[in-house]
Picture: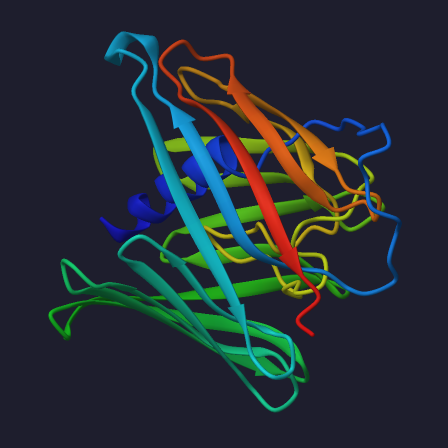
Length: 262
């Protein structure tokens, strides 16, 4: 079912990709600080699979492009391409994901009321034939999104004083669990192209700081993921290593490349 695919995607992204542990970089090799904004243009990830599978090593590259207003335009990883479109006020209008090999496509169309994101509709296509459609509806507590509802399921959001997303409670019928995060005090790699609202399955651009741990709670096997980041002289993350406390999990090392888009 689509709902469970999204929940698994949310868990996988949170546990495997979006965690980091605060560290510092010292020495004379750093460039002097700059006041220019930096934009992530490439992420290189070297993943080592679990020992039970022979510790296979794979390398992936993700490329980011921006439009003339320095808004995130595309994200490309292998055969997967994500494209962003915007309204005149700068809010996201749509996000389209396409796999160029299996012809699978998802489109998310966003609706607003008074500048607040009220809902979005996710459509799944195979060979341009609509296979599934789900509408996600937001609930607010003041100006903060507190809940996201879809079908009979929902997510509950909790934040810290810096606006970082610290907990997502997932109610999915028979399975209820939480994702709990802690953060450093450094700039997120996406600090200059943030999204204003948490999005189901993709929260990497929402929080202003970097996740240093991600923990699952309420599952049969709970996993703690920890990543150590290195930062440049401007406080942007430039490299790191992710590890998990689950024996069958993969680990990864990654590097980030930035541009001032000038």
